[in-house]
Amino acid sequence: MRVGLTYDLRSEYLQEGFSAEDTAEFDRPDTIDAIEDALQSLGYDVDRIGRGKSLVSRLANGDRWDFVFNICEGLHGISREAQVPAMLDLYEIPYTFADPLVMSVCLHKQQTKTLVAAAGVATPRSCVVRQLSDLVGLRLAYPVFAKPLAQGTSKGVSPESHVNSLKELSGICQQLLEKFNEPVLIEEYLPGREFTVGILGTGDKSRVLGTLEIVMRPGADSHVYSYRNKEDCESLVEYRLVRAEQDQQVSAAETLALLAWRSLEARDAGRIDVRCDASGQPQFIEANPLAGLHPTHSDLPMLATALGITYQALIDEIVQSVLTRVKHRICSSDQVTDCVHNA
Image 1 (cartoon, rainbow, N blue to C red):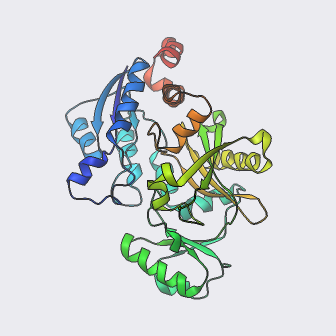
Image 2 (image 1 turned 180 degrees about the horizontal axis):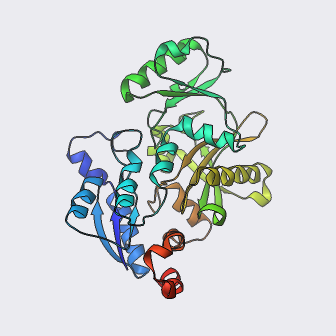
Image 3 (image 1 turned 120 degrees about the horizontal axis):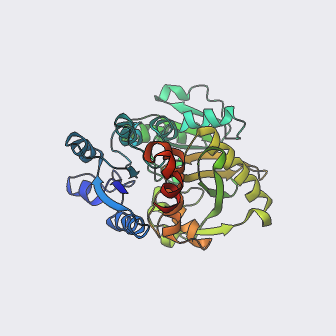
């Protein structure tokens, strides 16, 4: 089975003059190598495609694949993560992870919160600031937390994001509006424990893989899982495996995360970020339908490793989820079993 591999390689964009922060969400060469090696070890014929514009050229030249393993983040716009899935939908080529609608919604943090709240998922009160005048009459309780509306990898998140007054809030909002040229999301700050919950599967077949607690080490930025903390996570952050059967807050976080995942209709694998309020009740923070897959640096593979699941097995779980939900598009009816289980 021929599998295309789409990705944004960080080093290529750096060579083109983009900054380290511009490219923070993009992948390192060893991530692409690891995914390719895992797919090949599972018996797939892997064809590296690269970024979205490369996919456009390949499609125009008539290239096709049985499915595409897509980890493209995109560069421009709130719907940037939806660009490659939309092109693959146009050509009716199956692919890993969420569809264009879900990718767009989940990058727009306020839209995500609105949808999960409608499904009964707890999430902190919030508002969107498009201009400083939007702060007039703010009805949120301090402290609050300010971050860009549609960035990943904690871009734009710093100790200054934790705000205790209107004056501080006005200052950080002005900085973020100018730097990222997009609205700012303001949320009531949650002072409790922070978790990232790994999810595998799609719809009613989705399940919790496990949970990591995010614990800041000495020297890390306090109060916040900041861009600095995330970039230097090996030295500044402890990712502590916690278990629902031993911890009521973890159990509640996992229940909330699975409900959020299913209500958003995310697919195959990803993460839900959760933080607890002052009373210890978990609340939804963000959804990650396109989670990082570096074997040792990204949260989802680190969680799998902590649970004794190999990187190859994690990639296989993702692929089997894809093949199960699109088997009618890949296999004839008398080949479904072999296609899904022995591809």
